[in-house]
Amino acid sequence: MPRQRFCEKLPAMVAAALLAATVSLTTAGLAVAQDNRFGFGTDVGVWTGTVADERFALGFNLDYFLGPAFSVGPMVLLAPTGDLTEIAFAPVARFHIRLTHLNIVPFAGVGFVHADLDEGQGPGRIDDSDTSYYIPLGLTAEVPVSDHIALAGTLLVNLHNLELGPPVREDNTSVALMFGLRFEP
Image 1 (tube, rainbow, N blue to C red):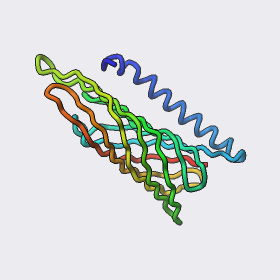
Image 2 (cartoon, helix red, strand yellow):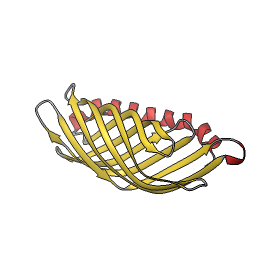
Image 3 (spheres, helix red, strand yellow):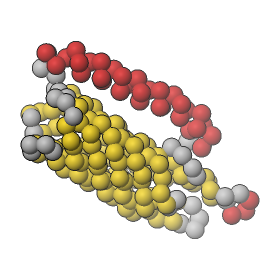
Image 4 (cartoon, rainbow, N blue to C red):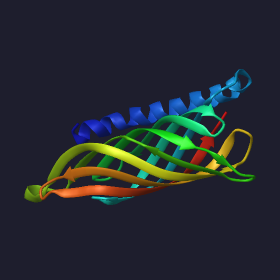
């Protein structure tokens, strides 16, 4: 997808994510009495180690709790700004270790990442994109602020194989540091 078309669609994508967050928050309050098993998380942070160095990133996840200590669901990581646009999607499994005033949540998954690099001008300009496998490995620390809401910090190691532009610039790993909120049943 050319960069201009992606940038035109970005406001719609952000609006859809905000709508999903609003619906999730609204239904979380209504469904608690109905044995709700869904949780939602949202993050902002920095995605480092990419071919364009550090990137501002947004993260979203939806969890279906199979039990109090285990959940599965999709995770999306989006870096929409600058010369490099990256979108990563993976279904992940999370193990929730609940301590007195802290929850530790290791997670892992397998999915896909797409990167679009549009860098420079003139004859040395790079306009290339690539899609690769995506293996997110991470750890989240959650501090509960109420029965259903927690402040969260996530360290995420991303394994992938992106090759962008001549000369070929490989991007095999990156790291994201994210901060956000978790809404749990």
